[in-house]
Length: 314
Image (cartoon, rainbow, N blue to C red; front, side):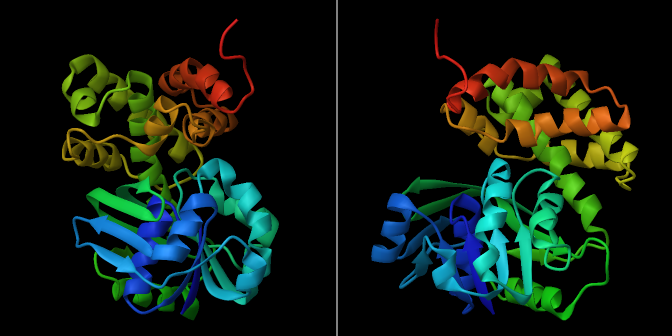
């Protein structure tokens, strides 16, 4: 398959790299020093599943040069999806599939609004990884997992071909869930609660889950997300809360979420797409979400400062 990875950072670099290692024709869309390093030295991936280098690696900052592909993995931050959707157009052919892999639950509808429902799948991934230097990705924890599927119609041959491509990739578990919406909300249940609590406390997950006070807030954050999902007619089972908490209890103690790391570093983050989304979707369905409201309101000024929308000091 010919696959474009739009956003070759910690997520796109890992999954795109594994697909390239497995023999797929992968083109990385990147920019700046990261792009230059990939073009010059290839894409280097350190992983608990085995290190490797994609060299030579196809990489560009211009989708028009790439042209139509079979699949596009959209791996930008959630707040960049709408801008990315317009940039994807030169790579869209008659049967191109677009798979969003960022955190959050709103990317599929945002992509559909620009590209149309025929091209867009629901998608998600799980991995703990980061860009440690230009052209260098480090996978430090969580068994890499990717899932995708049609939102409102039967699966197509293209979806099955993509699953088969991922199945050939070392260090990746792939699945086409029976209900991709439920799968996306399961991921959101985890990441929105973890990210919000991590950014608020600036503590690793090992501390958050062991202190009674912060563990209680974490549990309430999980319950609020579940209530919003159910109110939006997503068949997310009640057991998902217990299962997610069990997953959290088995994360590396020093683990942090990407939104948490961005806020601590003073970078624009996914606050609006995670805590903000819980509030928006809760308001639409008439569900109160006090913990997420407190998290969002507490962090909003930092987010505004990171985006140059508020003064740093008086």
